[in-house]
Amino acid sequence: MSNTFSWKTKFKSIIIVDGELFANEYKLNISLTPHTADLKEQTAYFERLKNLFEQVFSNTITTWRDEPLYNMLKKSSTNRFVELPKPPYDQIMAAVCFCKANSILDSKIIINNIELSSWQGDGITYTVDKDSKELILLDRPDWFSEKFSKFDPWWLRADTATYDQELDKGIYTGHFSWNNQKIPVDKQHEYHAKREKPEIFDKANCDNWHMPEKYYQINVLEWLLDRCQNDEEKIRVQMEYDLFEKKQFIRVLQFLIHFVDKMRANNMVWGVGRGSSVASFCLFLIGVHKINPMLYSLDITEFLR
Image 1 (tube, rainbow, N blue to C red):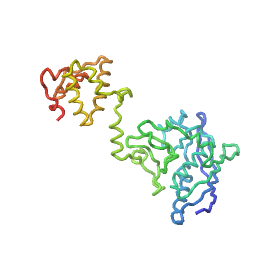
Image 2: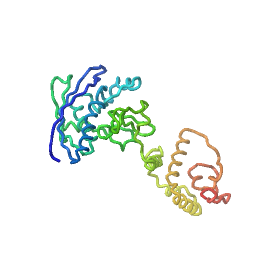
Image 3: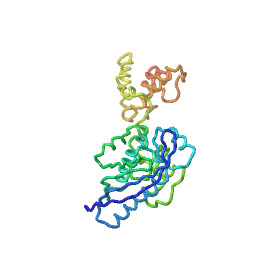
Image 4: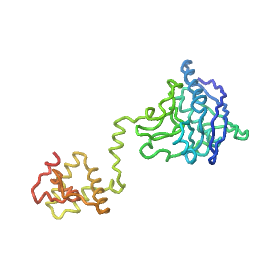
């Protein structure tokens, strides 16, 4: 498919500039090329494009993340927002519209360029295509926290979100669904959150031990051997270390080194020792407990069964 055509549309949105609200109307002229020969599919994706501007973007408040008034309104109102990575200049809005439109169309229709002007924009029309320098202004590597850093910002995703919010279940994905654009999801946003696959979520959390990077880099075996007083203790450390390694517990040992350092630095008191863990000479050297198991012939397998 190579027939290119254009479509004109418009939507209204209030913009926030330096703490003030201004009524605004955006006008767009969109050049697009279908890349599917299926006419039914073409129609379905063009309807999605229409709904993006006539429902999703329409009747919103447009601002940028660092606007103080935006943060106040987000907490105290149920308005829908268009959250930009930079102040709401027309160039930024044009770039965001170009990216979002292409993202939702799944390459079934390609947006070649978007011409955008606004009532507040002094009659100037901005054109954005795939080579426009304005797209560089959308680059925000710090847009999400580290926990959600693998997600793209809303303007690069195919969902209906026009702002981003981190939730317990994942990230916010919009008030609407492309399957039924007229039915809003719950206003608490929690239901319509993008969820990670359980195995990915589990691995990400298992890999994050909330300790300084230097502890991740510790060679635990060397660290333990350096604290041995004789060859007998070194043999015991090597034997226990092999068991810890077999059970994939080396990260646990790194964390325990950090944990004990933290408690000592803050003058915290912990017990002499409890349960089968006192059978570990490695934990004794780390400082988890104060009972030397070698003096009492305690078997490590009582702990690492």
